[in-house]
Image 1 (cartoon, rainbow, N blue to C red):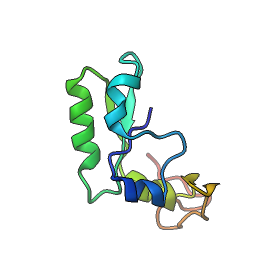
Image 2 (cartoon, rainbow, N blue to C red):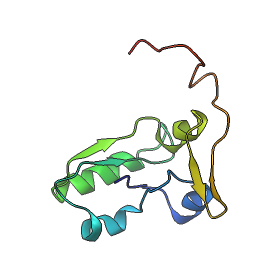
Image 3 (cartoon, rainbow, N blue to C red):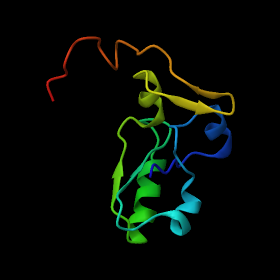
Length: 102
């Protein structure tokens, strides 16, 4: 499960396909399955706050570093009311044919 900690307007602009809004998490998540929280981008602490709230409920939580901003900038699929699409990857966040060496 990917809980998106952003508000409804940001959600409508685009979100990771299959992501959910965290307020539904307590009733819909399986505590045995890890969750990955995300927010807008690296300058936002919404994923950290959502992750803490979910951890306090007993969920195993990870945070998607870079948030939705880097998800979209790396050319990954984005869902909106119009469907799912992807932009070309930003070479500053996802260099073509080059490994970051991590």
